[in-house]
Image (cartoon, rainbow, N blue to C red):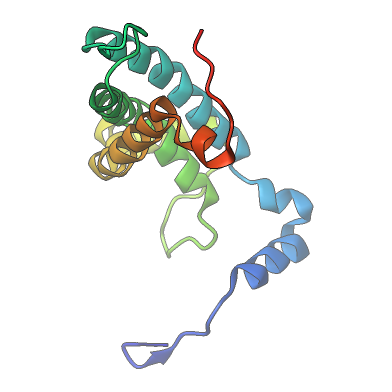
Amino acid sequence: AKEAGKTVPKTSATQIALELIRTKGITGLYKGTGATMLRDVSFSVVYFPLFATLNDLGPRKADGSGEAVFWCSFLSGCAAGSLAALSVNPFDVVKTRLQVLKKAEGEMQFNGVADCVKKTFVNEGPKAFFKGGLCRMIVIAPLFGIAQMVYFLGVAESILGIKQTKV
């Protein structure tokens, strides 16, 4: 590939992984794992109770099962996913900054989650933690809306031939 008169070598995921192992050992592959867990666990703590609450507010199926109608599950999943994504965006920013392989000239270096949070806050302010938040909300909303709708419709059970049991 060419970039403004320069030839940029192609790099594969395998080459990157091997280079990380060569230069930083096997632990180099796990840089940012703590930040990733912080983001993902926090997301679940926000998402699931919010989804359950929103889903309970909607209309029920007419069959007497007490289950929400499918579009209610979809909208509840979209809303809960979107709000959870925005609420944990600061952790995503930290995770991404810790996992960057090659820093640009003059770009900050970080030594862990706390150092990244401190330097980002001091140098860029609180708004920096919400960079990309809208994009994450746009991606996560339909993803979790569809996932909840599929779950409530029993699509996986249907495909696998498993009879769905209602509690």
